[in-house]
Structures are given as structure tokens and as C-alpha cells.
Image 1 (cartoon, rainbow, N blue to C red):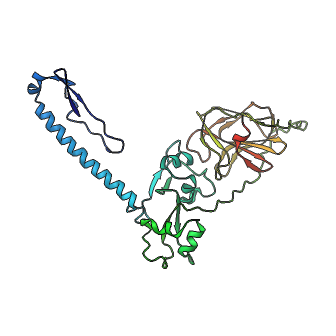
Image 2 (cartoon, rainbow, N blue to C red):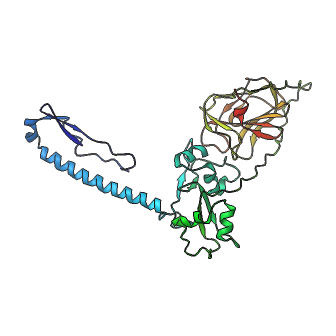
Image 3 (cartoon, rainbow, N blue to C red):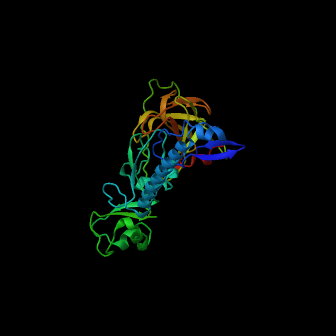
Length: 344
């Protein structure tokens, strides 16, 4: 709180603590102090008591700041830790609604690969991110690694494309003798990289239509050059295309309409393993396919010919999902494309 004498009046201002300094906000004894006091009222209102209370709060705030500096120092020097990685500043984060790998990486200032590499449940399939899931978070981009038989500091450094000094330089690794690593020893490798997992996309198994069309559907038109597709839904992009997420996530409200990005024939409708939930797959001819995942409901059936912009389903959160969104993917001759390259 700041006391300011203005024109014979004393005005009071309670300064807010900086973010992260106070874990719990408690009622202040100063909260009931009048906003302004005249000089005559200074003695009548017992300002001496207010100033004493102010001094006590200042002392408490100083203690809280000292505790926060101690916590920060612990993280910076790697003296904290989690089970399995003693003495290292890793911590556990519980996934909340709306979280994505991209948003978590941005929040903690690390790469998305770092999160995947540190959590076996995400290896090869980032769709396995779910509310309540516990994730190990490293203090920086890199790799958490367990020493295996035959490993040396040199082979570990070469495998993860870093120098041996980078591994030795992190105090949390507690390597007293670089020539003697123990099998099962836990290391954190700053800046380390892990070879990307090979992602295999199996061909969909169509669900037979309840009633086959009387005549084969006409061949869909070839996509126009340039930008052949339209946006399948409006909303906010919460995750972009990258090596472990072969599409884009568009988030909006539950049951928001999803439309066909282009003319084509529906080749798959229904639940699909791999975290996709309910999915519709459309073949557009000329090698193009589009996938629409996590649907709450679908409005088409296998074998149906659809037009660009036609309603095909409603946005949902089925499968491995932390909130209503559409995972939209584009494939050309079986190869995943960044959807942004074919959207207007």
C-alpha cells in the first residue's frame, strides 16, 4: 500500500503483488482503510495502527519473495526432481480441457517433440493426450534418457546429436566419472534429439452401406489447380501440422457443422482406432483423400457422393480429445499434406 498526501488529503493505494509471488490471497487488514483521510482524521482514525499493519504485510511479502527465489534457484540448478529422475528439475503436469501438445510446448517454452519423447504414451500417436493424463515435463527442450547396456557417454551424445559437454554440463545428471555410466541411470540431455518415429497410416476398412446405390456413383470431378479445397469448419486452429500430427485441429463448439472440403465419395464412416474417434473419410479422386475426425455425429454414409460445402457431420470430442474440435487431414496418394497448403 502507498500513502500519498494530495491537497491536504491522504490517498491510499494497495499495490498488487507480481504474478507468481502469492500462492494464496488472504484478506488484508488494510482492506477496510478509508480511501482518503484528512490531516485531522489521521490521528482520529488511528493511522499508526494502519502503518503497523502495513509493516507486518511488507514483512510477510518479503518472506514469500524469499521462498519464491529459493524455488526458482532449485529449478535452475536442477536440485528438484521427480520419481525416476532424482535431483533433476522435471515436474509432472496434469492435462486440462483444451490442452494440445502445441499449447503445452508454448506454455513451458519447450518443443513439442520434447513432450512426446518424455512420455511413452505419446510416442507415435499424440492423439493419446487426454484430460487428467499426467505428463513429465522437462525444464528445457531435450530428451530424458535411461542408460542401456553398452552405452557410453560418447554413443549417447552421438545418438542424440549433442556434445558430451552438454550432458556433463547439466548438474542434475550428477556424472562424477564420464567413463562409468550405470545401466538404468537416468539422464536428461539438453538439446538432444530423437529419431522421429515412423508413422504408419493403415488403409481404412469401409463400413458397408445399409443400402447400396442402384448404379455406381459418377466419378468425382478432378480438383482444381491451386487451392482445391475449402475450409471444412470455422473456428480456431489449436494445433498445426507437424511430424507427429499429420493434420490441423480446428476448435469450436460442440455440434458445430462440418462440411466436405471438396466434391467426392464417402469411403469410410464410423469409429476408428488410433484415437480418431468418429471419423468420415472422403475420396476426391486424382489421389486425394480428406479425413474428418472426433465427430460427435455424421450425416453421410459409405458410397454417398457429396458436394463441396455439403454438411457431413458435427464437431465433437470423441476418441482421444481434450475438447470439441475437428482434426482435418489431407492425403495425396497416401502421403500426408499440410492442409494449409491446399486451403484458401
